[in-house]
Length: 329
Ligand SMILES: [Zn+2]
Ligand SMILES: [Zn+2]
View: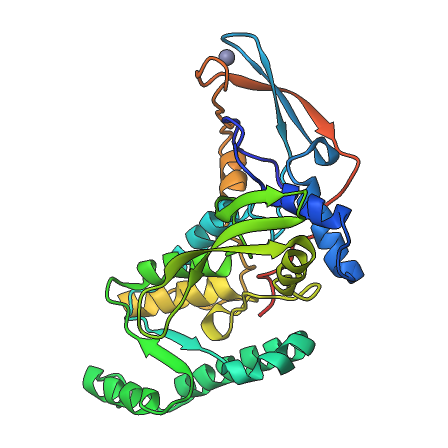
């Protein structure tokens, strides 16, 4: 659960929580306990149920309540912040070497099997992709250190229809990380794609991108009955405790900082002695600011000046489940 760091004006327009609440109040499809728990978490996000922080403006004297966010990975309110923090952590691990962007995909024909065996199939995909790349890296690389030889190998590997895409990023690895931070922190549907909730008809209208083979995607409008919307939304909920971002090899979690520092040292000629130094976790933004003794500076929504001072932390009645997604190797 994370405290909302913003004290700006409230969002206007239709929210996902409103649509989910309407769908659950009608005749929802059968939901698993896991799906129901996630939906309740999303409904509680940024409501008094999760508590929050009460601020007072030192200029105009008015009070402002900032509700807590749920921090859940399926929540459209919470993902932007987490994506930015993830991006910052990954950028600090980049080495001064060329990078390749490699994508492993599964054929659509497997979708019916995947839907009913998601944990097993996703784990198999991670295992096959990681083992392929690790084996590729373990091979004798002496010839592959030459650019032409390496590119010839990549061309050979990618000429087969393996549903694997490999490309050297045109604008460098940071651009790929930005893309990945958006891609890996995407949620099923964002608020701005919701157009209209029709309670009398029990339907919801929303925008979606229609993808055609080689052509750019086009925006289209769709209307669905609420139970069907809820059913499709639940298809995007990941299995409980499923780790969707995994790190292998040099970036595997245990000892990552030490290995990256050593690799960076070897690449730049500034070799550090290897030792069993304890791993230092990179602090996230909030931790770094707290360690530096920097108080969060929030804008007063009434007078527009940066003068909000925390006067009370209000505990909520509900707790959000832990949000584990990028800790495993
Ligand atoms: Zn949330
Ligand atoms: Zn004020």
